[in-house]
Image (tube, rainbow, N blue to C red):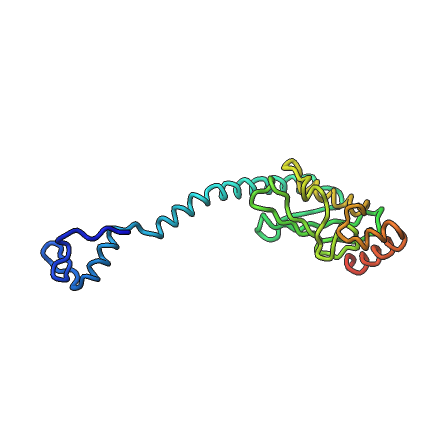
Length: 209
């Protein structure tokens, strides 16, 4: 609660300064006094924001440096059948291309994958999802991928290059015991011919052309 203005500050409903009347009412005089004596709220808010923003900014800079290094390494030594890079100038949003492995029903297909890096990368995994439709027990209709290194097995030592190679391996060897789509996992286990035929059909429809 603000302290009242000092005595003598208001006289006859007016605020005096150097013998001159500044305000002609007690209400205006009090408003002016409070304006002079109270801290500026916006400054306090800016200061708090600045204190909290500094660590986040440092994390963002660290993530950006790491992502740029990975991009350089990918361009120098790209993984087999894969490529990746930023979308426009946004280093935290990439698009990757995966060629369907020749020893799988996805052979001949070109699959687009979206990669989004969190601000605290590489301490948190990137969000990776298929843009191209895939008939697979570990990839659902939204393009989400059930892959341990993108969840609890993630390590800062991993890179996007290793992630893309792991996805290629997953296309060749699905994991029906940890499925994202149980119906496809059941088909994979009980009728492999039908699974491969359907996966091949989807590849021709969505990943070729």
